[in-house]
Length: 276
Ligand SMILES: NC(=O)c1ccc[n+]([C@@H]2O[C@H](COP(=O)([O-])OP(=O)(O)OC[C@H]3O[C@@H](n4cnc5c(N)ncnc54)[C@H](O)[C@@H]3O)[C@@H](O)[C@H]2O)c1
Image (cartoon, rainbow, N blue to C red; front, side):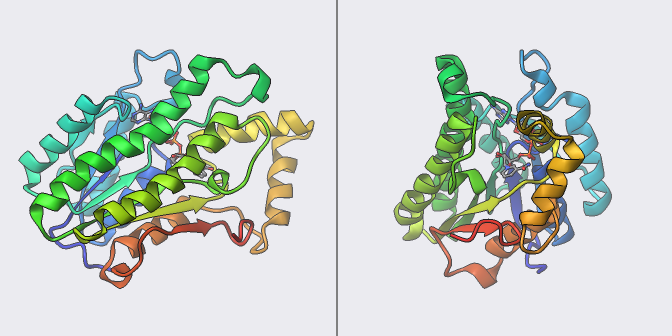
């Protein structure tokens, strides 16, 4: 698929090397799109070990620039904050004069504990980033796409946790299930403007977030990380663990002309582990 020529794609939460956001933008860069890295500046945050730092964002942008052959902009944005989101898309339009694809990828998966121990602050944080952030960014991006008049694509990175429950993941599962609801409603609301809205539901990928989950759940089940990953590989019908490029391939398809009649869907990328 290489119908990206001159098109512009923004991916939130794409400023961590090895993350799904980087893999998604890498694929779009290979397909000829102009790509925009966006992420929170997590350097002052109490949770900074799980968030993008300036050096991370620069590294991701440099890797992508090696493919695009031109400078890749990095625009910091906290998806929880509507003013920050408005500023992000304002800068994109100032620079490129258009917006074709939004990938809502920012998410928080590091609050892992039994439901009875989740604090109101933790609950709110996960919901604010992982669910409300998708709403704020989609609203801002769709507003631009509607004015442009040629439609657009919104792709929401949900999760297997958008379809099934998992132990010790209450806020994350609730937020991701909510992302599917948002996807379906946005697909209806923006359909007449030629904007498709779909969700992508990967199972485990060993990113920064994925590694934190491996460490937590192997301890939770009382096994080594290697045993935990082996068990995962065994139960996946296709007998391998997913890669960022698997998710990126589906994003590329959903953004392409081939997918122009697909909207409101929540598609698994799980090697068959999740089938509904
Ligand atoms: N890795 C997996 O196993 C997996 C599986 C299914 C879905 N996902 C989803 O994929 C997406 C990417 O996750 P990842 O695994 O690449 O992890 P990651 O930690 O590399 O990416 C998450 C990104 O979100 C950013 N972020 C956090 N708070 C933010 C905020 N307020 N504003 C803007 N950005 C913010 C982080 O800085 C980080 O760069 C997430 O939505 C995650 O839930 C991941």
